[in-house]
Image 1 (cartoon, rainbow over the protein chains, first blue to last red):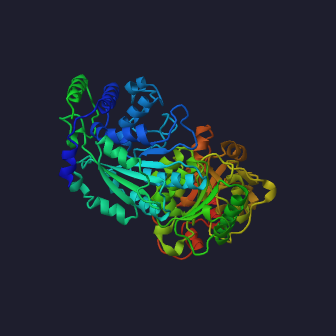
Image 2 (cartoon, rainbow over the protein chains, first blue to last red):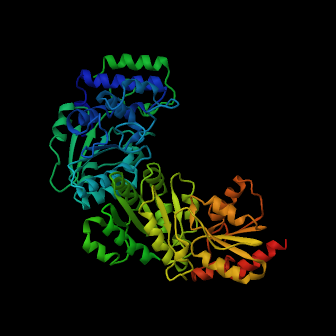
Image 3 (cartoon, chains in turn orange, red):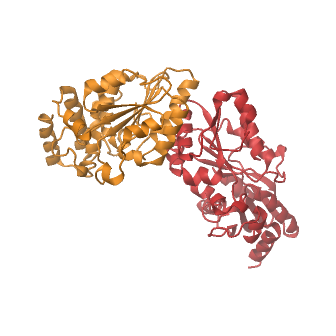
Length: 280
Length: 304
């Protein structure tokens, strides 16, 4: 099944996905570092959420009725930054300053520091619990806000994720949507080897979620799923997004070594830009 | 003290729609009245402390003031990262009501003895830490808690602790209360140890022993400390907590930072897990923290 998802991901990459990745490369170049693979698997998920799903106002980031988006796998923040900049939450030029002294953008998202960032994440296993709290708050305050939480697959190793999952189901939070960027690789290596998550969809179902699966790089597929929410009334939704780590850079795809790079230099950047031109 | 704290949560919730109660898996019937009166603001979330802190933080981000209650050790050791990142980094108004501070759960053994809670939380920016002396002071603290800006850790005693606080002394988070002015010696104490500090001071009547009740360990009332200690030749700290990182450490740091270099006798628990069970009083005696032992230690320090 995992192989099937991989094959479906091999469709031509459209101009917008390519552009957002070029912004990520700008940020990698500017900061000279970053989580490359973990960011590139996320691009289409974050893109579709902000283009077609989330009710947010870039000129009024604190609008009370907005939908909340939590990037629980905070290390993928360059994908979020690229989309937030593109949407006008802050100037695109800020991307080139990431991680520099005094920058607006750090190596993990920080609430209150970067416009549009709803939660400070990076320590894994926090986002879903925060999302449960936000979804409960929306219910109590009778707001239409929905809460979206994107987690990494490696992040699901954290027990706190499953504590929050039980609670989301107990509270019947159908205004909560969890997503997993299931790129099958964590820092050390394959998820299947480090700590196997399968059968992942069954796990979430058994925790009370309405579960769907999608090719996480298929923009139309993501859009179709995420514009028909909740998946089931009275239950939290879980969308398992099958993705490719490093998507768009052929030399980085599926390579655990490209999870994070602490030193990115000019030749690396040139190689990335070249690879992106022919990305599929 | 715990009953007062929880009853006050209900009272505050009646007054302010932002107030919530969140328990982990507490005794049957806890805050039954509140649950019946306002079920939507009463949460019993299960044995899942890391999640509880995150969930409470998520609600606080949208304007709620969550009062969370569970056993102190689980509330601090188990979910320290959630407290640090979700509550302190965001400076959110979580109120952590910690049952069984110190040696309260003596019969239950080291898993339940919160002898390091203050040291665990004190380095976290934005965190305030308060240990009231008795139920009456708890009531005053809970009143003050509603408007405190940021996370607040409330350390509970055993319950039925003797009332030594006085209403006329008032109460403000971060402002120490001088219970008795110092002559040669000033004892700085917190929580239920203040009643023992007063008893020890009675035994030291001839040498003039003052007592400063430092109910707020963070932010520490440095000014109140320096003023109270000004004439004393010896400062003594007394706490039901490891000597590492708690009240004694905070007092020594504050005196040192202020350039006030006078002898400090730090009385607290030794750097080892408490042995045996018994009662809170029994373990305090083993650690040499009962009033006659405190008085002896002060005598020895003065004659050193």
